[in-house]
Image 1 (tube, rainbow, N blue to C red):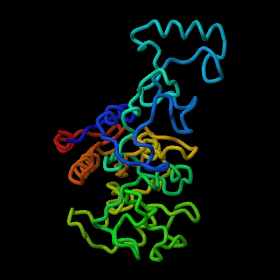
Image 2: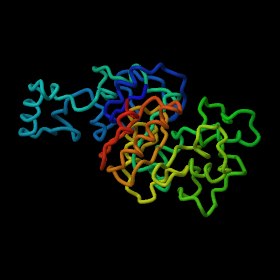
Image 3: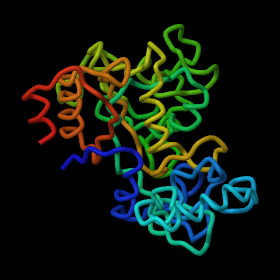
Image 4: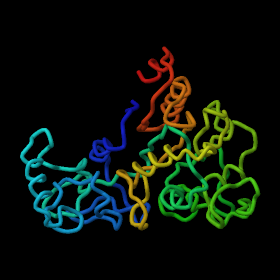
Length: 301
């Protein structure tokens, strides 16, 4: 079953995930104790919080009487959920329990982002996402010199397993990624051979698909950025000093369905079917459409 959700609703997914072994920033810790959070959780992580805005400190009212009074009104209003700011995914307070106390997700849970594609050329986004993009091993050779796809033995198949593969050229003129940084697009360039090796109807779909240009590179070539932001909100790597996603141990498949957040609904429908057919657990989107069709309605069903 595919669930269509916004990133703020991912806490429900987290509580349903079973913890898996984890090590560094990805995979992140399989679960964390109350009050234990990665270094990205601070004032900017209010969307994940389980507590109201504090009356003191630079992250809250900071002693301002007017703001303190406003906070009191919000906390007294049931429609404001007692002032709780976020989705109770993670919080610096050890007095509250959050989704991450149970699990931070696991790498075999994949989220497909149906949006404007992904900015392989954005260094900050690649810090958060390049290790998180799910690779389709059905379209890839094993890393050279390795007996399995998980060349480094960390329990996840991602770009790090190809870092020493001489077939991957970080100087190829077709690449758009940051200098010297291996991204999933580099694997597209190195290993696309024009065949549908896994027989799923999509040629060389190594790291998602572009339903706008009908090719295997979901690069956001108009640099709209919305899809990249959605992917970061849900799956950005933890403890790298950048952003952190609601499900930092989940992986992402970028599916480009438009050049902005307004799309042709039939492209969205095709991507939803692709996700369902290719083992995706969650469809994430924040889109409007210029049309409505029976294909789209049936795809959602």
